[in-house]
Length: 172
Image 1 (cartoon, helix red, strand yellow):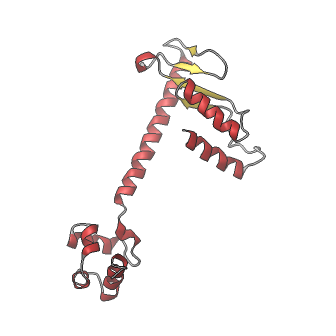
Image 2: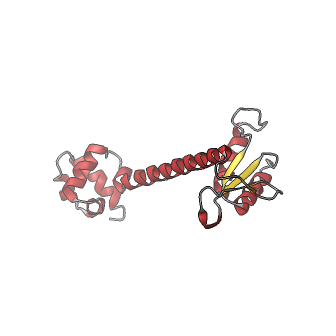
Image 3: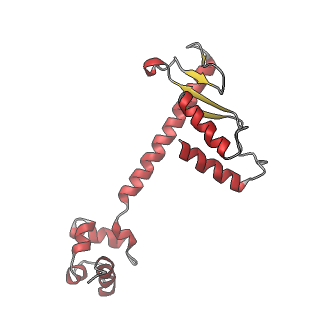
């Protein structure tokens, strides 16, 4: 969390050092308890942004939803009634933030999984990459392939085969 806040607000300060733009939050709501609140405040103080309002929302004992506590700096935690509309709003806000974070993480992981060492070879686009993977079965097999084997792949010219071979056999 420290890293995320540091990156986000360092970038914001570079883009708007006078803090006059509309992108500055009126409240930073942290998912967590007293420890996360303290960490967030420390990062903001280090950046000279100690005046930004920060609160933390933590699930209750045994992580029971509906027993959330709200932590504010230098104040005792606030425990809202289970049917309080403010509590419901905070739960929805937290759940949406979780959904967004998990979706972003999965998208990044999926994108990384689709990348391969073949993407780094000049002259290899999606079609040639597909042909190579179909022919050899894996990117590692392409990397180990000999020049003649690469030239045998449909859609791979001798020039492109040489580029692929040279890319993976730099020391040869």
